[in-house]
Length: 173
Ligand SMILES: [Zn+2]
Image 1 (cartoon, rainbow, N blue to C red):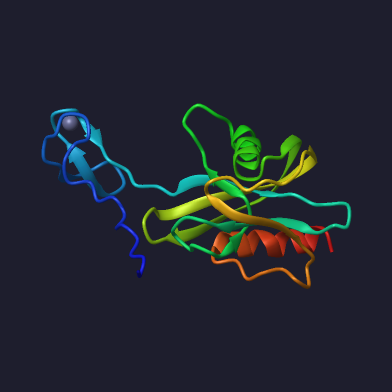
Image 2 (image 1 turned 45 degrees about the vertical axis):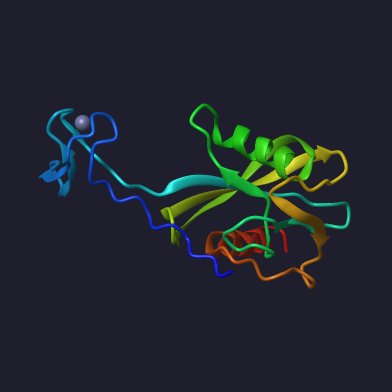
């Protein structure tokens, strides 16, 4: 079955009071506006993290996706920030949820923004996991986990991951 991603959110009614939104100037440009709540609606890139986990041979850990989008493709472990956590906490949480590993400390690698079919745009924050322990164990979102050397590395489907991998290669040649 062909996967068709859901369309990005388009605000047409207020999520709080249900009133119809009308375009209104917010000081810079027109945006959807609820007159009842006196609130403009903004669409912005959605923040996410991905993690770079190295083994003793310098290979990087990839996860094979068991969910859409990009089912079956290999990507870096990662996921979206929750409202109640820092980006560093998100990186360590996603590491544990997706791989079963426990990380100690993260180092910021860089940030990349790319377009997304269902989110509009995603801002991905790349972190190198300083040290980690445990044995990689795929969770429900992953069908497999594997360390790949640079030569063996699979082509990842997410543009932000590709940019961050290129940045990683520049910093750790
Ligand atoms: Zn409202």
